[in-house]
Picture 1 (cartoon, rainbow, N blue to C red):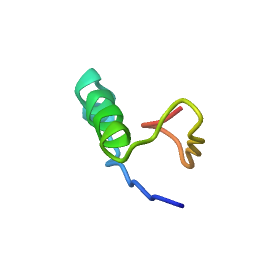
Picture 2 (picture 1 turned 30 degrees about the vertical axis):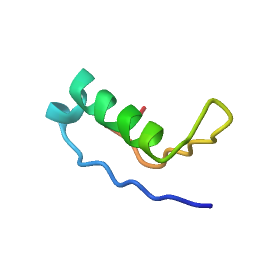
Picture 3 (picture 1 turned 135 degrees about the vertical axis):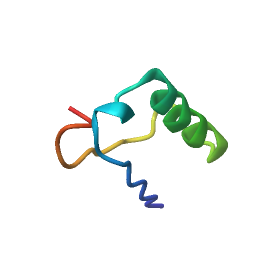
Picture 4 (picture 1 turned 60 degrees about the horizontal axis):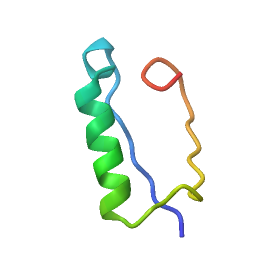
Length: 46
């Protein structure tokens, strides 16, 4: 299964609050430590 999650860009999104949102979303979709996450782009996720 492929799930796409597009995050907003900008310095204000490089925060613990955004990390919490990402982790919560992953857990709600039953992802675990075996899940592969591929990040494309720059800035927010580097």
